[in-house]
Length: 171
Image 1 (cartoon, rainbow, N blue to C red):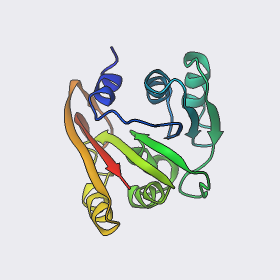
Image 2: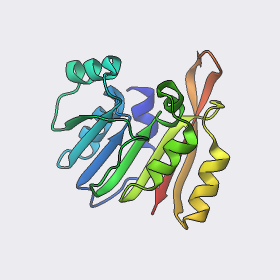
Image 3: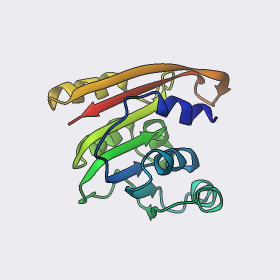
Image 4: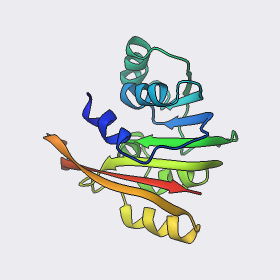
């Protein structure tokens, strides 16, 4: 089983999930959501013209989802969701000219019951202090929090990914 999907499956399972937003969607997160919540409506957001993710999704993911190209930081999400997944999203914010703080603000302002964030613990572009501060200031509750060791370290230009950090938030 894919290490990412295995990590996601280890987080607290949510009930009564009918409408899902996959922020920064990709093959792995969308596959996980389709498998775990097969009867749910899923909106999968990718950055406009990110052919790396768009092609991967179109060629590898089979199921019912709505693929949306938009910059989360520069657009408003008006739809309500039961669950929002942000899998490796915060660290990618800088790739598209945004900051993780901007992404956190947008993510926490989506009308949803639950948000699951999973990203690299070592990624310095992810401001975890800001995330925890924002969760506290908004009186959100952390339902589950885990760290997962990567099977193999992954070298990026600004850090070496050794661990994932996952946080399930209830709004």
